[in-house]
Image (tube, rainbow, N blue to C red):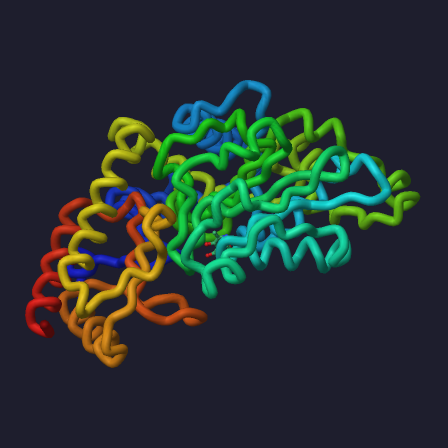
Length: 385
Ligand code: PLP
């Protein structure tokens, strides 16, 4: 098939805007008439510095990132941040006995909490809420007043995942009970899809391969003061705490302007091109409006065939980005996916750990793409009613 015949609803890597891909295909061969492809230029050239600065500036523009925040471009995906976050927030470790608070609302925050336990021991991690225990499976967010937070100076930081990609669970907004504390959030699958008040967070991270660009780039936005709180290796050793590997050490990466080692400039450029388009289209206020509208239409379509589709997450916790449903009887799922494929609607299979149907509704999915899928869902519902 040609690209025009395919709409890809995969959860990540996700599809990219066609214009960005068209520009990228010529940039990879001969970037801005330099005779060299973008992936061949030195990461230390003026051209690369310019790309890094432009992408950072677009990100700052889109998210209105305050001046006292630092942006770092890294590699290693979201998973590397599961280790890097606790390592780098150690400056908030005030007492010998300390706890890192994790809200576990799905598979990715679960993985994050498990890594913190692996690095610092089970007793250092306090799971303040565990959706699986509360609801029997991931699919909801417990009321904040029930969360069992660590009180006082023993708490190092609180961590949560803003959008659980596998389970289709998204926080409707900032959890207000965390206001004023040290908060770290994984926004890998919903960043740049709505406005965010960055000043409420000490740290936000996101792998690029869903709403930002290509796999290989991870963006970290952090309160610059964190960079001054980092204990020295000697202090850490005295406390019996692990020392971050150099490639996860935010102060070192920040000091070298994300160029401590070879950064994939191609990925940074792609991210910049995607952001340029988002800015031209009206920024995150607009993106939020469009994402909400697309998600509402998809949930509504699934809701029109309640005998056929069952939306997995509970109302109030449903993600705008990853819409998870089961077909019933379950054999219909294969029929649904096959019919979708015949129409060029790809990537609709749920994550291998949970199965079912998952519609990923990232920024690159246009309203007309949603129309096509909605029409198919309606037809499928009627045919099998
Ligand atoms: N966090 C979230 C919310 C994700 O969706 C993913 C991947 O899908 C990850 C973390 C892990 O990212 P990576 O595969 O880039 O390590």
